[in-house]
Image (tube, rainbow, N blue to C red; front, side):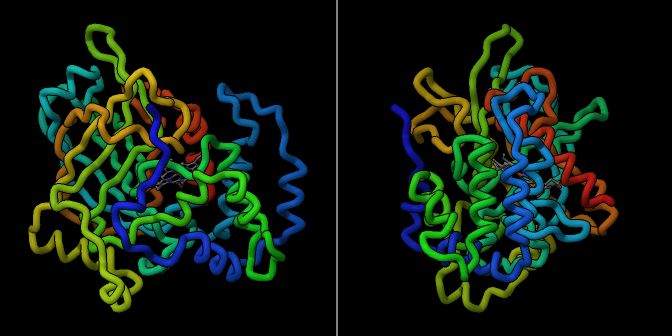
Length: 356
Ligand code: HEM
């Protein structure tokens, strides 16, 4: 049995629907509709890559810019963020699932980056469009290499694949307040109910980046020392539990309340720990479609504990140098969803642009 997404239902409270906010954001950005039409017309089917995706990596990054604007030194998406450091202690169970290096030994150092959604570097944390939040994790492996997880605070994705995500981004770019109804986004949502669920059922803003669960969304294949493989998806669940602002608290929170809050939490030595799980698929689960969440009843294997201990200086140079890529994987872990292979090629394009 495969469960469709219904992630917002549990909270009972909602921030301004993301889609309304994105439309307002769009209004504040000058995007030439002729440019968008040009991009649409130049979409080619000849893209030499090993996934069914038609759009090129550059076209995907350009679609993010079309939706959110292009901002100097900023990531194409999840532009606003804060870098922290800590460590990871693996569980004994983890090495039964995979030979991946970060699960074989003791505690290793980790770099974290929490972020807000959209490519707008100064988006307010109070803005509904800044959900879902992001959590990127870099494990520093004993041999000097690294491996990354890039997750967000929603158990799913608005679209089934990369090309559909581009369609959604371009629809957002064309759906400013002056666009006649049904505008491009409304038309897209009319035929993509999962995207509508994603955009209209985001959790309310959390009290802290540390009081929010994060999901890897795309599936990976774990292989252990006996050659046995399992399909898994990551979940990072805060030890403090999920905790959200009330509507009154949100009114006075402040545009940068999340980074201010996490700095205070670290300064006070309040433990910030996430239990890091692999949700293990069963045979009936869809592996290559991130818009379909696996049932909560699936086996959850605790892979270890992530602990955040300090904030880095967060200089521009440090931000430039810090790059995460969901396709940066060690032996024992492989992409199981074509979107990971696409993402592996797309992230470096944004990195090159923001470091120019
Ligand atoms: C086809 C789908 C996707 C595309 C094209 C895409 C594209 C990108 C790009 C271009 C960046 C900026 C990279 C940089 O400049 O360093 C980025 C960052 C990010 N993406 Fe994605 N992404 C996709 C799917 C996802 C999914 C499924 C998630 C969550 C599970 C996600 C979460 C994030 C986060 C949290 C960041 C910020 C990473 C950081 O802190 O440096 N993305 N994405």
